[in-house]
Image 1 (cartoon, one colour):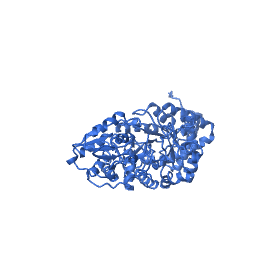
Image 2: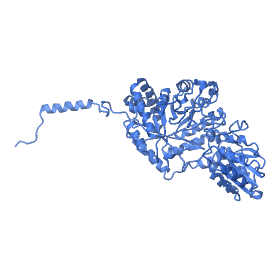
Image 3: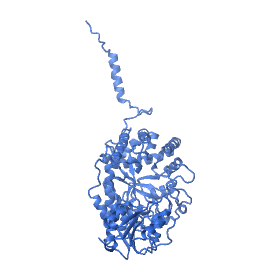
Image 4: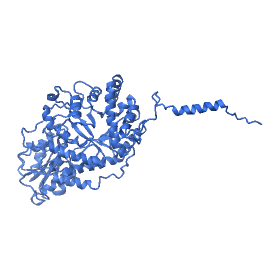
Length: 578
């Protein structure tokens, strides 16, 4: 009895063989209606430059465009919008702000989720995960991370080794959290005492010292594996306005810029600084107009790329800042101009609808202007080269530790305390050191920082404390101007913390105080220009416990300070005014 199973005929067998052979030569679809070869992966084991060209060749317009965006998001966990950008638009990078952090374990979980989403993309390209962790005044990731004395404290001690270790310890902490890019060091030269937006973020008013310390800081952070981004090109240290709120106008010649603002770049670029951030500042005497520097092809292509020979990545400061959109344009148009001028990535930090509007405008422009697409390809190549060089080595696609027991490096706390001690500067000392107890039991500590009052009470346990809050307005509160001198008049000794214009106004009400007045200056020492009548002055530069602990140790006589004021305008006139 013959089987009911059908037997293949010779023709059927031949057709199967032909189809099988044909399938071997067919290329899989890429999902965009094209038949392509298997997609190159970021993690392929092949030469970097070959891999860069292979990926760029396969990218759609949208995938190319996505890589030049760096976005911020709202909330403690990645928003739906940011996850969609990563999944659907091949996003290049994410900026972490303080608003995104509730706990360090929560942050690392968020970073892991975003990197895993990126890793699931066609090319498996990891994200730049960036933040501002300069040290000192600017520290977007707080919680258990180290609070350092800051850049200007490094300028006061003048020790490259301290700058190197500062960069290294900050970098190690960021790496443990999954951050791979830091918008630091700040290499602006603090040449204008009214440059309050930079102030203590700068190393010095001397461009050579700035360059020396910035180079050491970069080398330390680079050793930890973090991508450094020097800022703010071509220089924010002479601007007396904040580019967040308006367009600063700096009237200098190119020769002045070359010798001062650009000198740190002339040092760091040959040493391999991988990334730079462009600022939103107008230089009418150089450009002949009020175009923001971030949108200036001359400053970017002719100065930065040609004269300074920078081949790395150029990222804009936030394109939602008022300085960026001056001249009647919106963020979308300003971003287009910034990319056409030669920036490689645009930072759009805050508003989802602005981010999407910018995307739509650039996508349309990319489709209509082949030359713009070629410009974007140049930037994407730079982005991929840097990611392959650094992130592939770091295995950035892997989940970081959840930081349940996060702690700074075992040597970090002691180092930052010693660094703070080395930076303390003694300016006037008619009554310093100030005795412990004895005749100084009737002492009042006045300040706006709880850490200042706590450290003061630790060294002078019998002292009383008087806290006054920082006013969100430029001037101090009227009630503080009245009550503080009235209360101080009951004491023999007052130790006052000077930190800003608010506290300077309060301090000026003590000019007739008959007892011993000691001022401990913190952050920028610029306000000391207005206090020649104070006979006892110490300068510290951070607002953490380590800085105030160092200041009170010097005040009580534990050591003789050796720090030097890192700016050259303390004795200059005229006095600062609102």
